[in-house]
Length: 581
Figure 1 (spheres, one colour):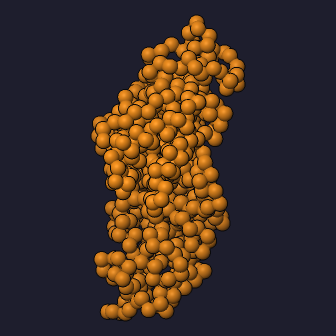
Figure 2: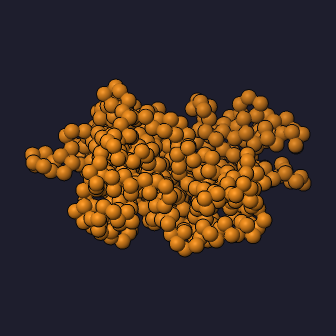
């Protein structure tokens, strides 16, 4: 049911309720739901059961009065075909065929804008995701963050929000120091496992690549950073650090480009120290009287704000614990005008939530409780050839995002007949993005590379994309003017599977709003699979290019609308909509 139709029905019920609740303090809210069993109708309302007790009325009698008033007010018959009372007072409504068919005209009229709203007009939201340490290639967990963050950002955008996608670089601390010493050891000729190799060093092949380019005095730069030119001096640890960080930031940029993810802003942890933001936050907390010293360390009274124990802010060696710059960073987000902030991180960051929020509340600068929001995702297990894959030669200890994209692209992705042509990674990108977003973030996920390569109904992204391509094939066979489908008479669309497909198309806008409310972009993937299923079932049950011209044109319009909604949903997930498979 389309939003204007839903609102029209709500208005009918509200008008019917006015004389019933007159003289009381009741302010009823009419809620419409889709019955689980389609045989019960198209929409259900339980308002009679809600009001029966406070009004001291029999719920069925109250329902009968409401039904009589609603039917009298909608006697034109354009929207409501019939109303039934079920059980103790449920009101089930059936829409007219014309009302159900209206979704096709709406989709054809709105096209790529179908499903969009201005719910968030004038509101800013910042979505921070991936935020990988620049110490190695992006791993599969970063890929899940990338898919979730980009799709969630798109969900906010289609509801009218002003969205900023942000990547936070932890370019300070112990890990960066370990990166520098690892590259230095490689530059000196040491290898993992040999005497002289640092105990906690990074062992992947990429370390050797960085060392080789450092010795060659090359220049590298990230997409938003200043170029870093290697000095080539193996004793110049600061030059090694700067070069290695820039090198890996550039590598991560390339991986994200292959994944189709773009960021609006990059924020460096080191800038928080340079700009005095970290020291400023600590001094403000001390001034607020929410800290204390114990055993040579500075502690924050996080238990005053719901944490299970107080937390150390500054260690005995004078360095800050890792949540302190996070507090400073989120103060900056707030000061930049982002009243809504969402962080997408791995579930191993769960302990950070209470500490960061406690620090922000303790500052007492107007930041609301529960700021920021978090979407935590669980780990991804990669299967290939029936076996779990744990190690990438490139990374040394984990499967990289680039590995997953290339494996899922298959072996036949080079331009046909062109020697040494670049691989087309679109297929791999599509599979990885769709798969990684097709489950709730808080569930573990097994990524089966063999399934991603399969050209069958079991492969969910293939199943959805094939639905789109199938419609393209039908429209190509027709060879008519697609623009003319917007004015087609839709009254012939009365078959049961046509009604199911029409209903599914009408669900799209509501589904987008629910997905946004729950910060669950996986719902878009669920919807697309269901819509594809409806399309395939319809295609197998009914011929589209029939001899009856009126029926043919109506079915073509339905096909066109379905293709548009598939295309809209796939675009939101960052997945392509191929015209041929």
